[in-house]
Amino acid sequence: MEMIPLQATARATDVTVKDLRRGDQVPCELYGNDKANVSLQCVYNEIFRAYQLAGESTIVNLNTGNGAVPVLFHAIQVDPVSDRIIHVDFYAVNMKKEIDATIPIRFEGEAPAVEDLNGVLVTTRDHVNVRCMPSNLPHDLEVSLNGLVDFQTTLTVADIVVPEGVEITEESDLVLAVVQEQRKEEAAVTEASTDAEAPAGESSEKSAGSDSGDS
Image (tube, rainbow, N blue to C red; front, side, top):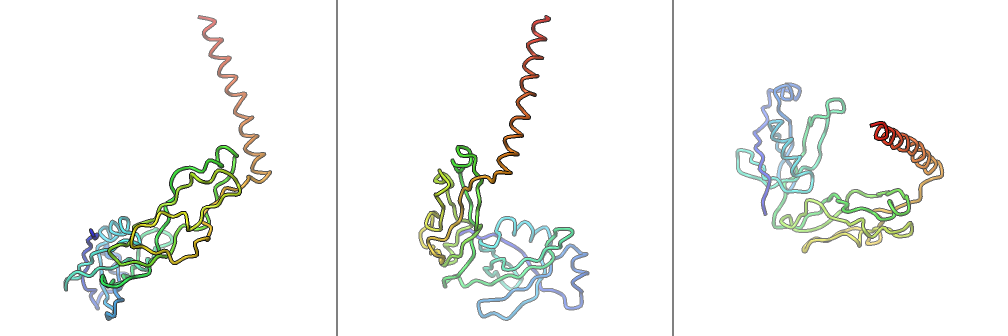
């Protein structure tokens, strides 16, 4: 299994968190797998790139200077104004033991009921909980929307494509997505919008015909 590499260094005790961030460093904590907590720091661009690739469901090979540790991004703090990562918790993973993890759902395709019946796609979950060996941990899990052909059909956990060696620890009938009828107000707005566009199209056609007639 290919892991995403990330370099970290021990956090200096005489440097404040504010100074670290000014120096384009992100303060981090490493814990889990019966290890004592370790305070670390990572270069912002490097940790940002690793998080973009790994999310919270892919193993990262964290090099701490005292050897590499397989970890998961466990908790991410983001500045509400700048949207920059300001703190990260890493969870050390025992590669020989099963782990529980939260995996994002990736909805694929299009729901026929949206176009054919003018419905609205409603997703009720964007993740599921799984249990597996770390080496089998999927980055995401796929669900096809193609089966949503009417307003009665639902997509549930049972419809997820599950890789070998992965167990979903959720009820199989848990609803993930459904297509609902538009409310009357929404339908009226959609219809009005369609009607408003029609005259503009007719006007364009007349104008085009008129130009060709003059020439």
